[in-house]
Length: 212
Image (cartoon, rainbow, N blue to C red; front, side):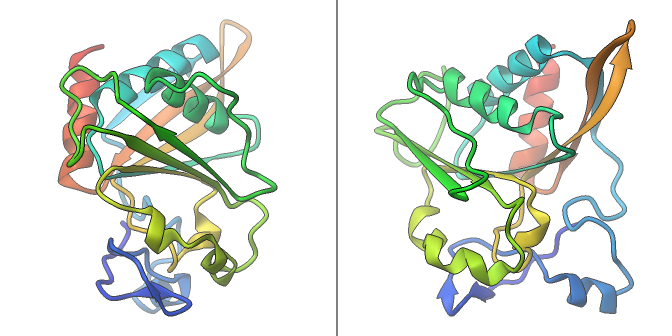
């Protein structure tokens, strides 16, 4: 499970939320597996999910989330991480293009209003979605120039693909979605494994479950 490190920072820049621990610190404590799901069992598993069902799940996630929220997305290339974020943004009202941030590291979407019925944040005037892809990052220090401390506030949803290279520079996740390749009726699909790391993450997954 991700650890809380109040006061930790990236490059001297304080982040407003607790950040993930560095891998070497976890190994000193006897842990070496993925920072977001160390020793955890998923709170729910969806098996044999095709692209249409993946997008429907992302839409339910969007309709029920509250800000601030940190979502980590883990999985091999082509399992649907960016597809999930794209569908989430569509459900939140974004109508423009949604690019993969693999090369630019980050894309920011400021939505003037949120169409979620009953969706909550500290400010109903806008919702910001920050989409990171750290596949090409070799060291957490590379994230310093992104200015995350200025971007992450009470109206922000942070979605991070390939979060492991950002250990020590990223906030602790509320939810981790692990996508695993699978097969259903001879067709390639994926299994979705959900892990929760905070009270808001637990509540969100319970709301999604209730609507299935």
